[in-house]
Each structure stands twice: as structure tokens, then as C-alpha cells.
Image 1 (cartoon, rainbow, N blue to C red):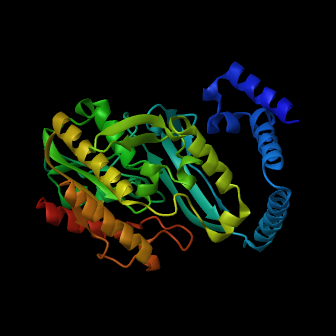
Image 2 (image 1 turned 120 degrees about the horizontal axis):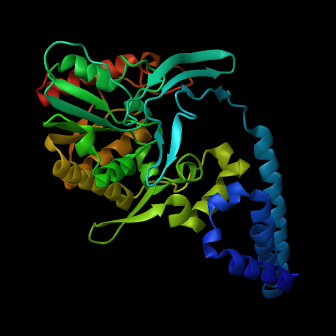
Length: 392
């Protein structure tokens, strides 16, 4: 059996190549992947254990495996049912609101209009409309009047984008309302992280997208962004498996390694199987278990390099990272580590985590959706333009 399994694995890798071993291959043809690789490799491991280890050890391992199966079944039965959240943006003017894109993973369709109606069970959380411009940025309306001679570039994820909010409830919109000489641009995309900012900065495309001669670039950071940089088990096996994957050498130089699915295929595959465990779901265990000093340094280096590249393309008056959302002590510790890492890299940060109590329901979309509310965006924008000295 071991010989037959080995022959099957060797033949598969000879025909398909080692590049076949990645999460995309599994998701695109699960039955084939399991039949050609997962099952035979598992049989090889079992045969090696039986042949190489003493009988008593083999018996103990078999008992442990049986107990693990029982524990998995128990965790499945004990895991409480979670409210089912439904609803993705439905577009007119494009086949899909999110479009697969090289390097960054996906982008928003340009010149699209999308209705986003989200429900939890029978409860509607929001029903809003999104509009994108010709560059795939969310449109940010501004009032007519004084000329807006400078830019405010906002980068980030769904909190920057304004998920669940109208065009006139986003952070860029409120900033533009309070700084009438500045034109706001919303580069936020749901699910993004710092790596997309670096990829965008490296593309050099901002020169043609931003006509104003000078201004500020700002990134709205949340604790979860560290996991998006390092490719946590939740991110790299889900919406972020094609996100940019960066490593850093001992000198702090950033190295582009493709995406999480192909740049580190075995780690991402291992993470995938980890996320399928009922036990890990029940206890809420994500890998890596915690961010390391290296992870914070990597995140800070990504911001430093992004700021440098943006300054080469645009006349920046400043680049800053907004620290703006924490829900518990663990997240506050992450923000503290990030703030210190940014300071060591001489990247400016604006800590707004104490401007409001994120546990107050007024400051999030609903009890089920923890995205920033319009009120939070208004509070942050007011403080931001004051700190930048650009109010009115």
C-alpha cells in the first residue's frame, strides 16, 4: 500500500510539477487533489508510523487519533450556531463589484454602481449604494465652491471605503467637508491591508490618477491588518489567498514573494486544514497564535517603503497612519506594538483609539457588524483635519 501510494504521489508531481501543490489547486479541483495527494500522503505517513515505531507507541497514537475524532465531533455539536450574514454588492455596469487582479488580489470594478443590502437572519443591517469612478475608487462627492487645489488620499480597508455607509458618510467625505480646499480620494477596498498600499505605490499609477499638485496620504489602520500582512490562517485561506506576500531580510529589505497561495504553498495549505477543524473553530484559535516583533517590524517597514514611494510620485506634505479602532485590551496591545514599530521606522502615526468608545453601539453599524459608523467617521475626520492644520 505504501509503495502504491508513493508511486501515485511521485507520478502526480512528475506530471503536474511541484507547483501543483497549492491551495488554488485544492479549491479548484478538491476531489482530484485529495485523491492524488492528500489521501496517498496520509497512507504513506500511516505506513511509516506502523513500520518504524514500536507497537505500543503505534497503539497510543491510534488511541489519540480516535480521541481526536471524538473531540472533533463534540466540538461540532457544542459550537453555537452563529447568525448567518448575507448580502454582497450587486452591480449595474459590471459583471461583479470585485474583480480579480494581479498583485493586489482583487480590485473594485471601475465606473460601477452597486447596491449592497446586508441582513443577519431576518434583520436588515443596511441597504446602501456604492459608486466607483473610472479608476475603481469609491466616489467621494464634494460641495461646489472654493477650488480644491490639494489632495487627501485615504487608503485602507472597508472602514476607509465605508462599507454599509452612503457616499456622504465615509471618512474621506467628512474630511473633505471640513477641509474645503482639499480634494478627498477614497482608495479603501474591503478586505485590504498595508501590503496593497505598497503594491499600489510600486505600480506608479498614482501620478496619472491624482491631478492636484500636493497633499497628504493617510492609511486607516486596524489591529487585524497585521494578520493581513503575514497571511494569518483566516486571511490566507479565505479572501486574501492572493494578497501580496512580503518577507523581510535581516537588514529590513522587503522581498516580494508573490501571493500567499503560491509564495508559501505548504504553509497556506496547512492553515487551510487547520481552519477546517471543529476544535479550532470552537476555541477560536487562529495561526499564528500571536504577532511577533518581526511581524510588527515588517508591517512598519511596509508603511515606510510605501511612504517613500508615494513621495517619489507625488508632492506629499505628509504621510501618516491613523490608528483608529480597538474593541478590547488585546487589540489595544496590538495597536501599542504597531505604534512603537512605526515610531522606530520614523513613520508618523495619529492615535485616535481613545476618541470614542468602540464598545458603544452608536459607533458601529450594528451589534453584528463592527464596521465604523458614520458618527465615528465624523469624529475622526474632525480631529484629523485639525491635527493636519487644514480645517476650512
